[in-house]
Amino acid sequence: MATVTLKGIKKIYPLSDDDKKKGKKGLFKKHEEEIEHEEKVNLQITDQGTVAVQEFNLDIADKEFIVLVGPSGCGKSTTLRMIAGLETISEGELYIDGQLVNNKPPKDRDIAMVFQNYALYPHMSVYDNLAFALKIRKTPKDIIDKKVRDAAEILGITEYLHRKPKALSGGQRQRVAIGRAIVREPQVFLMDEPLSNLDAKLRNQMRAEIIKLRQRIDTTFIYVTHDQTEAMTLGDRIVIMKDGFIQQIGTPYEVFHHPANLFVAGFIGTPQMNFFKTELAEENGQYYVPLFGVKFPMDAAHMEQIKEKGIKPQEITMGIRPEDVSICYEGGVEATVDVCEMMGSSLHIHTTIEDKEIVVIAQSKELPEDKQLGFAHGDKIRLHFDGHVLHLFGLDEKNLF
Image (cartoon, rainbow, N blue to C red; front, top):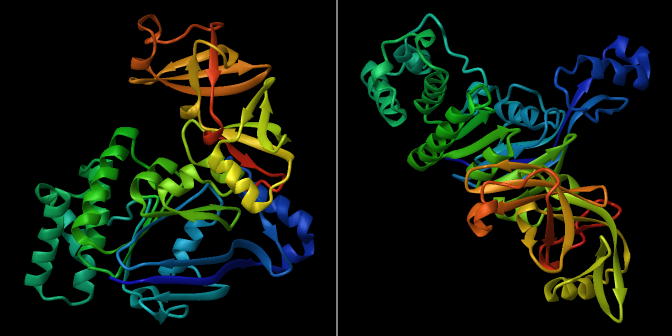
């Protein structure tokens, strides 16, 4: 068990002599062409090189489960690999259990890492895969056997100990990969997108297994994912990253209900938050947001914050989550249904108001019986939302509150 502290951690990939000749513009184009994923990455090109992680500061408590989350190319896996010792740290300090480990090799950091691609030895049985690290350490055979069987019991893979990895399903292979880390009893458990190769059903099952595992082995976890659902369900705290920078650190509740900026607001939540360009206006000392010809007044809590922070009328981006939009039968704003998705107990209704899209999540049981299975394209419905559920972002894209 251990604390992990990252102070001003930065990762810079140095430029080669050829890269220096190309200059920043040519180098950026080269890197863009080398990127395999579809998301556009905002590469930071400096005279020193390509900056992948910028000024990363984080204190992780003993036995805490921290999740690093963000789109592809944001620097989360690079950060994890620096903690593991698989990437050198360009600037900053990394402490594990109070000891500076910048220059310690991976084998001396007392960490274990689970990779996305399982990384199992195909010619070895499950038992031998689990036992391999202990054999390298020349651990006595009786202790190896006990640790291997205890880990197999925890993960429910005892009956597969004699099999080779090729005879296992994806979920079973991932259990073996996790088991191989468990037997080492590390101070810190690192996981790099361990569920991304599994189908949706298996991902849900393995998420639950990881939660159970965390409760049983009670160690410090650092988990990397691009899936915000995994982040919200697994993490004690979530670190949201973009372009190498930390955007927000907080509990799942905090990042969902109090996003620090537009990026976090749009990244966390499915379907994503609805956004509208409008203004924060004032009339007779009362603040409101005009939208679709309706004045949405700020509630008492927001009014108090506006006065405390001295917030002035200004142009803003207003955000509202789909679950905070209500269907009403009097008042509100008329919307036209474009698409209605039946999601079991709820409906995801994509609508248009004055050429602006707004997504609504409605609970089927709360709708009239003839609408519980959904709305048709072109149906007219009325929508309403209150001031207390609005998120307001200034021109700098930061949350005003």
